[in-house]
Image (cartoon, rainbow, N blue to C red; front, side, top):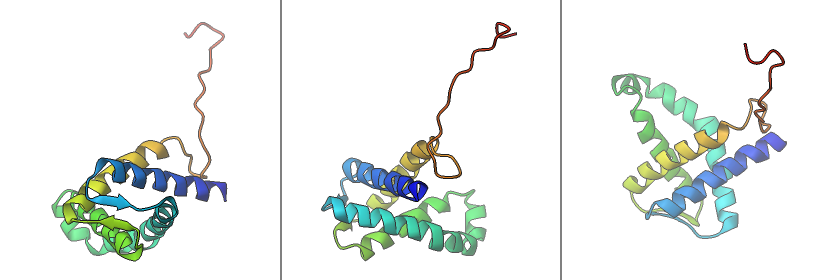
Length: 130
């Protein structure tokens, strides 16, 4: 349960970052941002794999760059489902998807596969490092 809430928080932080950095993305309130982050997580877990599989040929031809278009369309879909989460243009959705992807990737570096925070600790060797 903690892992689920941690990943939801990562999605929320990524959406808020996109809302702050991109002019065409508006999150009207914190509860609506939380709802949008939850729906984005569900869309990414359920719909995204199916869409990626269906668009595999064009994705291969574009060397994976079409994935950014898919992410933008799914972000726009979430904006259509949540009333207080507004994306004005496809360009804003594209840039927002890029920001959400980068922020999520950066934050997920510190989350393990089981959904727990990973701590990296430096260990001193007793033999002097040789």
